Image 1: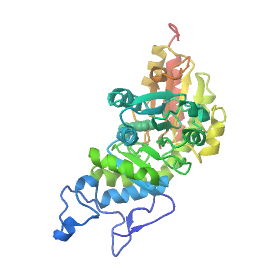
Image 2: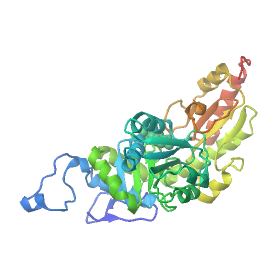
Image 3: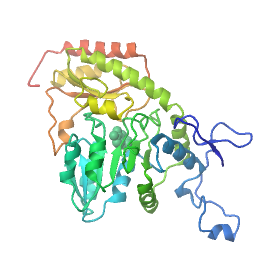
Length: 389
Ligand SMILES: *Cc1c(COP(=O)(O)O)cnc(C)c1O
């Protein structure tokens, strides 16, 4: 089916263009694909052969993601974590070595330590701020470098061009979930694969899980083949729902960005906050790298509380009414969770005096969200200081 092309990577890609038509592609569900005759069944190239390989619904979504990420080929995975693990498995082999940023999403680490190690793949965690120094960690048997920028708890912005240059021939995989693929284009910089937890901003409504692997021409065949051999597949109904989320991605992200920045600036002025970690604020240690490589921000950032006592933190979190306390992010609803980044480090140490919070700015009114935080501080400040921070 002919499909529409558009410049933005969200509004028009993957839509039908022929004849009298619905706005959106059909939801083509199915396992069995019927072939009209023997010649079609035995043909060398067949557009669709079995449901596990996807249908026109999946192709339409992949086309939109490819436009967004400027990718040669896109593979869909059932979760963001699965997209990360599939990317790593595409390159790793027994006896090889991979380099993973110390700021990586914690389940990514658990996969390296719990599965890849068992399969004879060694992981070295590197300082997210290593830049060109990565070259010293690359060995003859290094098969992949994983970057995540910014880190989703601690928000270090990695110098991706320097890391890609230092990696040389070794493929670099980037977890690009924070930018939603809108504000950061890793493939343009020479990365092999840009991975997203599409669960977050592409879906945008906290009602489905999915991952995307946007591949360069060099990586496409290997990643596609690995996905096929493992049996990775996603439901057509989920693919359609994801595609629907993508139609409003750029507009939603602009609101997430503006509201997130407003909250971050407001928090920076509060005495209850020791520091705010938001790459778009001039106070962020890698603000310059972010300004060079990104065209904007999303709605996720961190703040360190000045106080670290449990009763205070509990009072603050429990007083929030608009901000929910739960994992994931990228939906229309605001979230605020306590985090413990110091627990997930081996190459570097995470130093914070107070408890870290991670905030996601949803699509609610900025004034309402600020009022919610203000009220929660008032409730928490009534808790007398106790114990060591
Ligand atoms: C959420 C997240 C993932 C995992 O995505 P799921 O769809 O929840 O499996 C991977 N990387 C980052 C940076 C994330 O925030």
